[in-house]
Image (cartoon, rainbow, N blue to C red):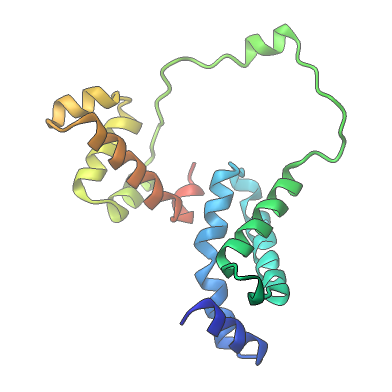
Length: 178
C-alpha cells in the first residue's frame, strides 16, 4: 500500500493504516536521530517528537502540491529537530585557549566495540561486511590496509563501509549502545 492509500484510510479512521504508517516511518525518524547525533539519553524524546511530527504531517499533507509524503514529512522532521537542537538563549559562546587545549583529540581513535555491537553487526551484516567492520572500527586499520589485506580495491572498501553505516543506522538497538 502506498502513502496516499494509507493517508486516505487514516482519514477514514482506520487504526490499522495508522499503525502501519507509524511503523513505516520509524526508520526515517531513527535515521534523523543518527544524523543529528542525538545522545542516547535524549533519543527517546526525539523519537517521540518525530512521531508527533508524523501525526501532524498526516493531518496537514496536501497531495495537490505534487510532492511525496515522505519528502514532506522529512522536511517537517528536519526542521523540528533543528529547532529542538537550537539553544534557547542566543548568546554567543566564547572559547578560551585552555578549553581548546582540553578538547584536543588524539589522531587515532579506536572504537571499543562491546559484545552487543559485535552481535548486532554479525546479525545485520554479511560476512565480508562484518570483517571490514571489525578491521576498520575495532582494529583501526586504514582503508588502504584493509584493501591490501583483502586483495580488493580501496573503492570497494569505501562502498562497503557506506553499506555498513546504512545498515547499522537502521538498527536503533545498535545506536543505543554507542
